[in-house]
Image (cartoon, rainbow, N blue to C red):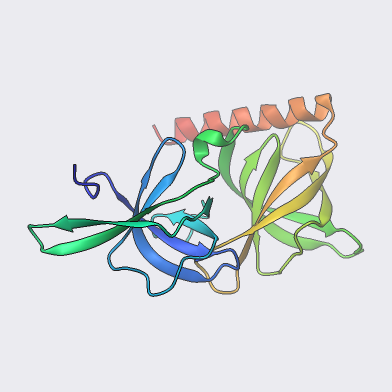
Length: 206
């Protein structure tokens, strides 16, 4: 079976958000298959991020651990050989425990150890955390606090910056964060926001 038939286009980045290559890929039940037009000149880093598609405003990315074990697939019709490698551990969409919604709203946060607020743009939100973009670099492992006022009542939240993720824009940084010490009432309010936002998006796209 030709693996290119169901392959999609994506872009690979290093853990430091440096562009590696434009590739094709297939999402498997527990991994990704990366398909290269030509054999990479150097070994892939142990950890890479896959960004599906080429939309500069899409900040979806998947953490992947590589194997650097390649197989070849020759296409007789074009007389071209593609190079395939399968990843190990990945944070596949199916593995994400909390349902997430794509959003886009501005938020003022107060980083740990600072009295000054920073403005960020939230692009992904769930009951467990959020993903944001900013032209300011933040340190992973640090926390920040903010007032979330998108629900029925304002909520004070603290979040831990877990990962720095790539973007396709120079000077723009993306971070994945987890909420800390979320009490049941707060969790219920956040779940209500996620549910309503998802419902609104479904209605809008009909």
